Image (cartoon, rainbow, N blue to C red; front, side, top):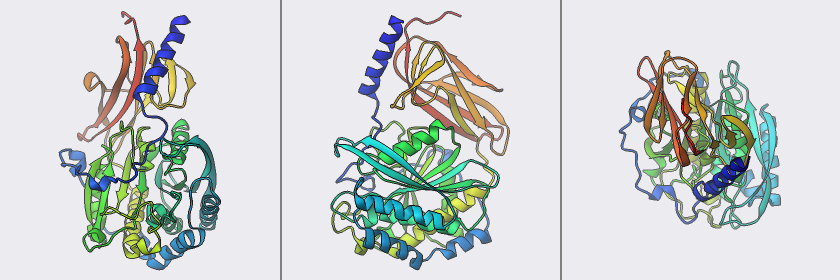
Length: 447
């Protein structure tokens, strides 16, 4: 027992030193579009594009989204409610407004209350609510999530950041809720983003702890900013490692449905990053796939009083929203060709001793004390699964060709490591899941 207590204490100390806290820090005065980090296209998953034909339902969805609809939501959120700093009356009024809109659309509407301490830039303890609208699928509980943050910093009404993303969610929800889809669509608006993605932390952790299947999370931030002809036709994407085929669908949409965007696959998302630019980081740190939609230019008015209605390019916001809604509609009905692996054991946010779960704790990195089994679950795509590979610090340790897919991890360790599984189907398509673990195993067992 004494050794166990010491082991857990060492583990918690290492986590505090090496792992990000529950927050993803939004870096103010900077912005990812200023960085030169464009994907080089070396991965086949980034290059492959799924082909599709014109779908009358998708075309109707695109045609229904118009500037009048966008302006109505934007003018109320920005012109009537105004500032929405987390925890203030304005933020609460915005939550109530979004909830009422979701109810009017016939969505399953819920509040998610949360409380959390802010990040290093915003000290104090915050209490607020996320607003969720769910459109259940007919054949699957697997979710496609479209989210944005409705909160602002103190001295702005936040029309572009992120009133534009919030309006995009509302508009997409109002139109897509009129149709039936196989998969479940979930529309979510978060508060607490400016204080360290606090609301999305609560939502993503609850999603994960309930083992909710998610095909993709789509994060829209500042999608109403365009001041030139070039930026007005530019969409930039940040993607997780297995979301390239979804970017391919988006590229096909812009061509086949006449939206005529120049889509830049701009950035690979680093799941281990200690800071994030928006709410997506809370999903990617828990293993979910993500597509982040950014505008084509930096906004110098971000977090200033100048981020008002005059800062919004409405025609650009209309087309960005059309594109996201069309993507959701296609994904919601299509058969997925790629395998979908997940690490089923260990789990994020858990402490294990000798392969047995002991407790849940607030950090994400699992603590493993003693021997453990790494277990993978794989949802096949269009073809049977051929094999599943298990990696430890990028070293291949096992290839499994039949269920259950697992590997006994019993090496000596005191420290942080990365485990990874790659699932391959019979056509060579592959997908990955990975996890950083704190593994404490002082004496290697002999088998």
